[in-house]
Length: 229
Image 1 (tube, rainbow, N blue to C red):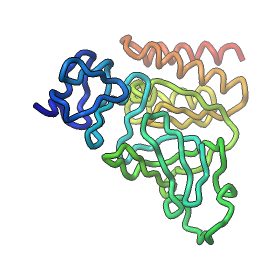
Image 2 (image 1 turned 135 degrees about the horizontal axis):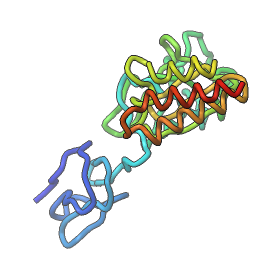
Image 3 (image 1 turned 60 degrees about the vertical axis):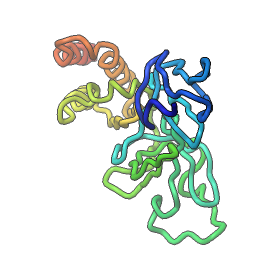
């Protein structure tokens, strides 16, 4: 009787999660007889007596010290709520956003406002699936003009490459500034035509990351683009 899995376990559809009536099914789970069963692939989240699943496909699982790209979706009296392409909720507090003294009741939108994209870093992930962010660190900033695209978070290591080799090759060939967030959000800035070429290269890396010889194919793809100029 009781819980058969641990918080943060990854489970597959049909897997038994709990036996007995001590726990309640929530998102991604269902009751079968006197047990609770997983309805989909996901990450177990146990809050009190409630068991739910956080979907894995296409969603980012936040990790401390990850550098990510988020979008400001709300401004509160104590900071900013940020969409980080995850089932987790993320907050940027005043103390982690700036060293400035901010008087109570100040207009926080002069720092960050709705729709702003920011390069930020995760400093904490709580057991309640809350993420704390900071803007204090090298390269952490509000992003200006440019193009934002979403990629599969699990393909990010291939897009970056060993020691940044793959994304470096795309930057050099397209003369674009590129930031790849660990959460699968990418920022590209350059001449419009070059931005499109960089995005096409990133999409090609994402879709062909499982095929051997990726570096050579991307190099050829980028050189072909250069020869048209």
